[in-house]
Image (cartoon, rainbow, N blue to C red; front, side):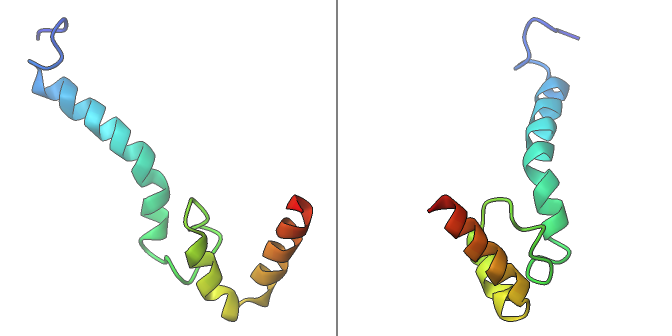
Length: 72
């Protein structure tokens, strides 16, 4: 194994890519099975998904209103 040159070692590159992807895929893996049904999971960085299920759960609206009031 050539440790001084990571580019020369495909295993090192694969591991680094996997680590970077796992960090970003961690929240996405939970969102894939039920993205629209569960609103608490897709709270990563997509507020639009929260607005959609608002029609089903009124509690989410109250939460957003409270948060907005606190921000204001």
